[in-house]
Length: 211
Image 1 (cartoon, rainbow, N blue to C red):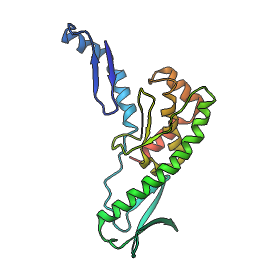
Image 2: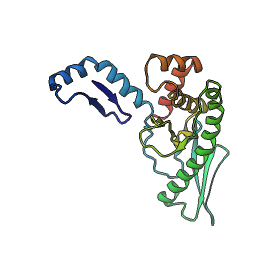
Image 3: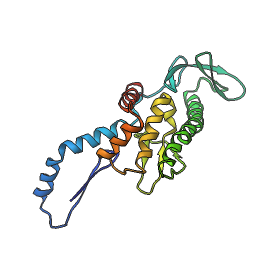
Image 4: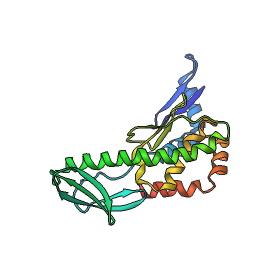
């Protein structure tokens, strides 16, 4: 009988067709603690930031620091960080939907560049270990910061750019370890501990800042 927990919290049980329902339930109860650990593990990678309104004065995170939105009316569209503020210029600066589009596009652009740079630096360590890290795929994942698939694909959420660099490195390292250990067993965490002894504090910081 094979029991799998998926990132969205779903549980799949594969067993012979003749297996009694009572036996399936017994196995699930027996592995209840493991199931809970797996679901809690995936929970840490789910973005939980509150819904944004995209109005002037609202704070937004970038690399772990808070920046207030400063809206300007201007002929062209522009987003930039300056003087501790996130400046957004647009002919529609009072339209929250227009501001949201500009800010989200800016996050995606910055995220792809910065996170890709960190991925290149961190993956070099795995190359020395005999791995062949694939180029990461950037895609918005409402409930995940990163993911690894059994075909070797690593996906990263560009919105992770809101977290400190140390937390970004933690997520990248976590996904890269799956190239060696495609599970969350003791060997996985032993390697994580070796490569990143302070991974727990980074994890907690990620949860605290982006909760």
